[in-house]
Length: 272
Image (cartoon, rainbow, N blue to C red; front, side, top):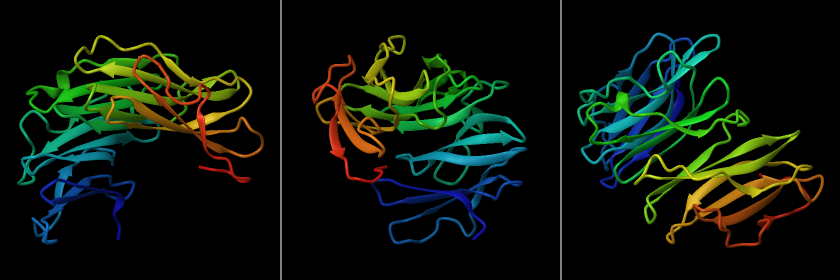
């Protein structure tokens, strides 16, 4: 196969969406979907994104109407990029106003970090050329999604590339973001919460565990049914090997496990 960056997603009706980018140098994105019996909707995959440059699919969510939303990086070699989005209907056509729109501001450098579907929309994060963390919350019923305001999550410029993890809590209607932040010569795990009922209220930074002499990296976030969030990460505090730790935290930074995190695994070799 000459498919590059394949991406699969499915909905509750059993429809499976398969999208892929062509190999670098071509970079268009194609889409096919299959019903719950495995039959393809179209005789050939639909060309859904066709820009000058390489379009690299990064995230896809199915919609209840049989369509989907595709988020992708548009790369202009050698060094420039934007995050873009397209919404496709059940027939493989663009939804009006959602065709190949800019998520990161046009003319500014932007690289996808993470995204998550909420009850009412899609929340997308990216980093800019200065490694600041930016985001947008786009509602599904928005008729002008390209005009949605940019939210500033972190402007320290100390984000480690592609270390951001986010999740959505149905119970609290919040987005929780965690990333690998450079502190002096090491990395620690920093987090922030955003209440979707009030996008202007971005909580202060939550430091999951601070150690100025050892590295914490690669956080992963999952929401719980109680409205809190579980954060796991790799940690070198015990010596030569990377161990796995976990913490339960809420949007205000209150923790519910050991204050410095609880060990998940500390075998005598690296845990990832």
